Length: 98
Length: 74
Image 1 (spheres, each protein chain N blue to C red):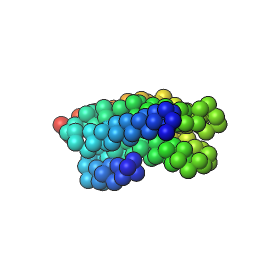
Image 2 (image 1 turned 60 degrees about the vertical axis):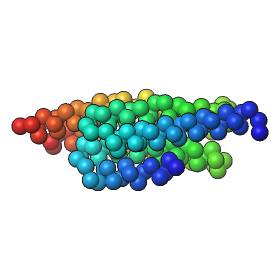
Image 3 (image 1 turned 90 degrees about the horizontal axis):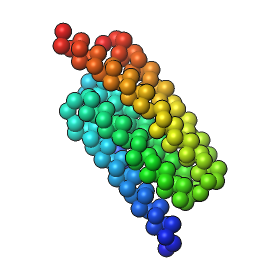
Image 4 (image 1 turned 90 degrees about the vertical axis):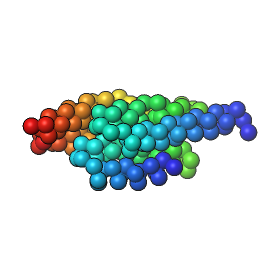
């Protein structure tokens, strides 16, 4: 087994484990904002670990660049979505209090 | 394992408040995109990378629309 294969395995295992941790956080947390915290984390650390595993295996080939585009889109676009969802949650809480 | 994480998110989306369901839907989009990236590397099929990119954009647009209308209707 080469060192690069080992690196791919470790990065992929870490990425999947941290993604599952984020899913568990969404399931377990009580408030919507706490859940949103874990939803935001799901697109940062786990996604970058999976991307790193992909780039170690594929290098900067067409497949590697496409993986970079997919994870980059997740990483860059998701904060706007989280912000809008937090606003919707805030309005929902506000209307429930009335 | 990533695909197995979609089932509890579906439960959250169907049983809890609509806003919590939206959060679960967003996470499900992320999980599905990462699963597609892993599948395309594992199968060596570069077409799946395009599907992953489209899934990332489509789940983002869908989440935006849901969040916008959820904020307006509540």
